[in-house]
Structures are given as C-alpha cells and as structure tokens.
Image (cartoon, rainbow, N blue to C red; front, side, top):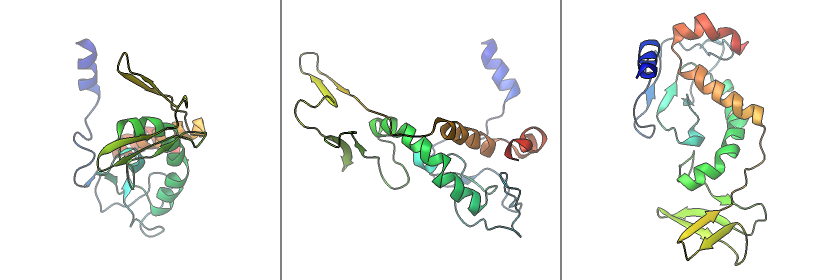
Length: 181
C-alpha cells in the first residue's frame, strides 16, 4: 500500500484510456516547439501525426504537437524501427496491429510464417520444422520465435523518446531538456 501511495503522491496520470480511440494531443497546439531539436513552427513543419508512443506498437491516438516532421521522420525510420523489430514476436503473438496491419512473422529459414486473415491467426509451417512444436497429448503448442536483428541501444532510445514525449512541459524544460541536446 505504501508503494501505491508513493506513486499517487509523486506522479500524475498524463493519459488513461484506449490507445486505439480518437486522437488525443498531449499539449497545446498553439506552441509548436519541437522537444527534440528545438525548432519552432517558423523553422520547421508540424503537419504529420507525431505519435507520442510509436504507432508501430499499437498506439493510434496519443499524439504530440511537440515533435516536428523532420524529427518524426528520423525517429520513425530509425530508433522506432529497431523497437518494432525487437518487439515483432510479441506483437505477432499478441495480434497487435501496427501502422498498417497486424504483423506477419516469418521464421529465419523462411519455411514458416504466422499471419492474420479475417481476425484469425494462420500458422504456415512445414512438417517437422522446429519453428512450431505441437504436443497433442498435452494440447499445447510452442512457437519458437527468433527476434529480428536490431540495435539494442536504439530500442532503449525509443523508450526514452516515449518518456520525453509524454512528460509534462514544465518537467521537460526544468529537468530533461538537456537530454535532447
């Protein structure tokens, strides 16, 4: 109970709800100052939907006005791509829809695949391939996912980017602004 009190006394909930619902921005649209490069609306464009937490891991609604289009592009094609590769097995097994669709997972040997069609998980596996092990006696199935090659430091940076995107403006300016420089 003491730990719960600590969190309720020291942290504010910045978002609570479904990440698949209608768009919700974390801050005032009038400011348009990028938290990551410092550009203002006079120096950069802010026309793209900047997801505070990557769309590739299921966020469709939590957006930020504090990320310019150039930084959005850099994050989307860089560190968030590595996070997506790292989480692909989990996203596939959990049927988490990414930017375009539910993720398809192909085994490293390209002999097996897991995809989704009409809301149903389909497993395509060659017989005796160790990618999928079925135990009919115990009614279990083991899928031996292998993580796609990625850069671990980029995965870490993606989580830091999410944190910096969701903290309140005052906390960012007073405590973390130097992190982005």
